Each structure stands twice: as structure tokens, then as C-alpha cells.
Image (cartoon, rainbow, N blue to C red):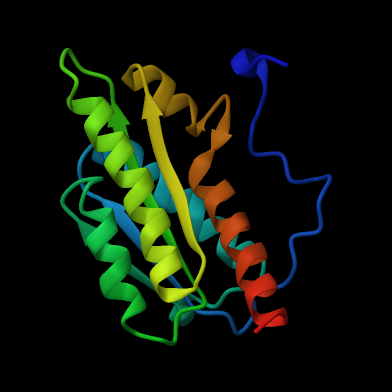
Amino acid sequence: MSSSMKNLSDFSHIEVGNAKGLKFAIVVSQWNAQVTGALLDGSLQGLQQHGAAEHDIDIIQVPGSYELISGADIALRNESFDAVICLGCVIQGETRHFDFICDAVGNGIANVAIKYNKPVIFGVLTTDNLGQALDRAGGKHGNKGEEAAITAIQMALVSKKYK
């Protein structure tokens, strides 16, 4: 089904689990702040709706999406986090910069997860334009930040179960 009319943040068909007692870091890009601020709001709401306490959530702001990699690495040096959520937004421009950044961020976030053997969640929008980004940051397609929070909860619980 095309995403043109679909809310992508519908979790009614899954059991999310309880985030009580879990610790999360949210690493959020300051670039495209209108979008990343909405993603952050969605992520916080998703975590707290499923039992995460405010004092168990640390927010780390970094300049841009590329710096999410270092931010996640810095967060995971603190072994108390059960999962890290990376939130950013890269919008296609006129040059190939978009391709290089998106590729590096995706690979970098995956590498940090492997390095620390902890869930590091990719909540980075990679869109053609600002409208598409806003649609996915609390607009008609839901909120990718909330999706990232749900994923973080589920993966943190899986990680604890199989430790």
C-alpha cells in the first residue's frame, strides 16, 4: 500500500511492552529543528506513554544528522542506557551531499549498535522535501520519533531478555 494516505505510526496491532525502569538516550539533531523538534516530542511521548520515567530519559543535542553517530557513541560509553534513539532529518538538495550523509549516518548508527551490542534506533528522516518531512514528524503519516521510541522499547526488552 502506498504511504500517501496512511498513518505509518499505528501500533494498535502490536504489544509494545512496558518501559518502566528502562533507561534511554535520545540523540537529536539541531539541523532542521522544526522537524527534529517534532520528532523529539513524538519520541518522548511514546516512551512516557509506555511507562518510561522522565528521569530515565537523557536528551543529547548534536549539530546535524552526521553527528548522531558520535552522539550515540558518547551516550553508550555510559553503560546504563538500555537503548539509544537517533533522531534527525536530511532533506534532498541540489547536490549529492544528501546521498553521502544518508549513507554515512545509516552505516554509522549500525556500527555503533554493533560496537556496544545495544539497540541504537534509526529515527532519521530522509525525504525529498520539507513537506514530506513534516508529514512524518507529526503530520498525516504519523511521527517517526514515536515509531523510534516504540522500536527502542521493544529492542531494549529483547536485549534484556537475551542477555
